[in-house]
Amino acid sequence: MAANGAANGSGGAKPVFSNSYKTLVLGLLVTAYTFNFIDRTIISTIGQAIKDDLKISDTQLGLLGGLYFALLYTLLGIPIARLAERFSRVNIISGAIVIWSAFTALCGTAANFATLAAYRFGVGFGEAGLSPPAHSLISDYFEPKKRATALSIYSFGIPLGSMFGAIAGGWLALNFSWRVAFMIVGLPGILIAIAIKVFVKEPPRGHSDAEDHPVSPEDLAPTPPPFSLVNEFKELGAVAKTLFMKWPVANMVLGVTIASFGSYGSGQFVPPYFTRTFGLNYAEVGLITGLVGGFSSGIGTILGGLITDKMSKRSERWYALTPAIGLAIATPIYVAAYLQPSWQTAAMILLVPGIFHYTYLGPTFGVVQNMVETRRRATATALLFFFLNLIALGGGPPFTGWLIDQFAQFNFTHNGGGAILGSLSEMLQGGTKGGARFAEMCPGGVAPDGAPAALVSQCKTALVHATREGVVVSICFYLWAAFHYLLGSFGLVQALAKARAARGEA
Image (cartoon, rainbow, N blue to C red; front, side, top):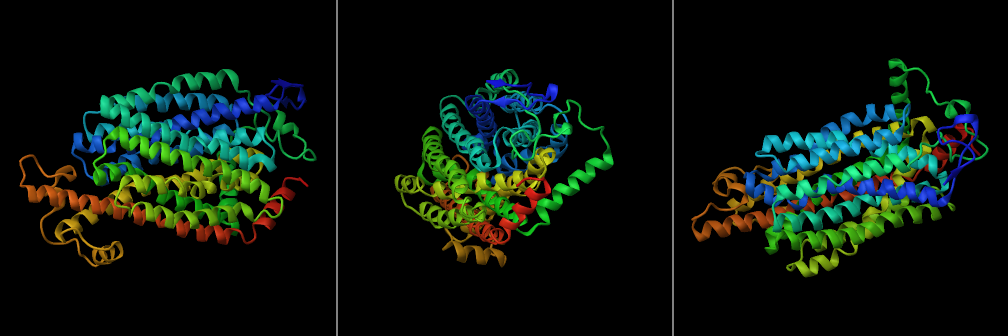
């Protein structure tokens, strides 16, 4: 698997890793990321069951899927990444998987909203330790021209995890309970942690960078430079300057953040949309959202890296143009799907947009990794994820949940509301004020037992319209993201050339 030197750089020789071994490493990291997203996003599939059981609002449901997970996930990502620049990335990843898997299982024991929220904080704490060191490992195993593809394959864990989480979560919630669903999907992560610890070696820093930039003695040294708090802040400042002060990179960071804001927000409420609108059970919704979403978004994730690496040979502007074009094409197709009167038609249409939508992941991560020094790569991912997830994951689901609550109140007092833009305009002008309160008359989104038929119908109609409207509004953020990617294509070639020159690469 590996030859000509130890992976930790002992003896000063640069080790050689076979293609089959690198495939094994990437496969294990994809599996870890898959379980990461199963445990992270399963709450969207079983959210309606949690809402019915605990009698919570859509805003609270959004907080469970968003801010309460994202807070520790984003805050701890940076210090964990700094540890990953100095110590074994493999050990950090293995330990993180154990932590988040245990907290996911504990979510199934929660008796109330507060306890469930506390456990979701724990899941975020564990999951903070995966992607920054994983991105750094992948960048050391794969050379720059193949990095977007490798990172796209790693990112394939997102649709794969969302798909398995939706299918398994829906089936378990229907046949057992949402509590059992959490427990069953949480525990297998322990086996993945063991496999990574046993099979993945720690490569030297900068191992796969250009051959005319040989691994330095510092990179091969088993012991990193002494810790200095001042130096740590300098390192963070240098990475932040690269991500946020360089025009093309900053626009790509804004693009991935805004696209993820819309994606996390709408994705949290797509399963409830199918349940509320078409009366499908949790297993049926899991199959629809899992298989349909997983198929299209999986293809898009892989294609994004492959197309970008191929087109970048002509011009590196394609690192930004590929996401810009993909998001612009995907948006109207998504909107059309959620305006359909039948779930069959909606599901068929949803086979298409993810192919274009998810092209943004690999190219963005590739640019970030290629713009920074070898010992700053985990930090760059952590800082990107801090900005991205605090805003997108932390804000997207609560925003969409709040939006649905507002639309529900508006529709409840306006007998179903009207067109989305008209309803939104009137809401912004205070149109949700006055009249009976939806949350009081329809606790948990449904009329109380024994309520008059008229109230039952009014609650259902208001919630169905509100969910559709909230999802559609969130999806429209993709167009905003596409604009930033387009802006990022200007000057990107020069920025990448300067980054290579700064590292002494050709």
